[in-house]
Image 1 (tube, rainbow, N blue to C red):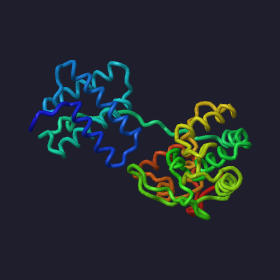
Image 2 (tube, rainbow, N blue to C red):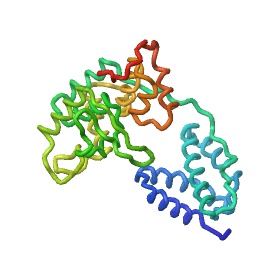
Image 3 (cartoon, rainbow, N blue to C red):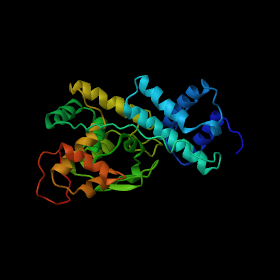
Image 4 (cartoon, helix red, strand yellow):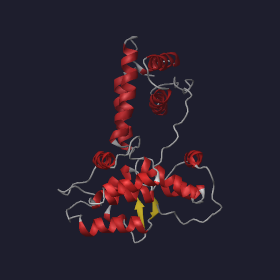
Length: 288
């Protein structure tokens, strides 16, 4: 194998991620984690990928822990590193993958948080005069959409009783049913607020530009504060949708499909938040 500097290898990896359609945020996160490894290894005069062994990666893992990183953060960084070396091995830039033998630290998954009825009602009340924010809240709360999916939503994806969530990153396309509350909130926004503009996206700014995920998060956080809701994040609206559907007896596989989980085990963790299981096995989604 020819010599390949770690920084050059990282640039190649980032270009490959871009070609595969990974988001800017994903690429930045990968680069940040691997740059952190590169800085650590440079202090040991290790700058070539072929010179990196499992011991160096184990030392890096130990250094992170000693510097206060949680087991979950260490695991995420290690995941970036493993993907990086897997790419180099597949491209035959290295003969062996030094990260294979390095194990992830054990940690307990955080139990998802959900809003209580009094909380999401207060949120609706706080945003009642903002038709755009109300539509976004209902799509997260009543259809389980992710923030990025709301940013990506196109006018042509809005159907009479459902919306099409286009494939992005590693998430496949799916169709999401809309209940009456979500339909009415979205229709009101489209009919009364959204101006024409050239953008094909549903949610836009006053100047007609795409409303980005970070702007959506800031917008909703403002109404969380106005409603005096503490300890809750924007994504917990989606969590609330999942838990309420499971409580209503909607089958696990249906909920998993609607919210776009890659593995049904991801949906199963929400069962921890359910005290009693309904007898119903119907597939009509519950309206909150």
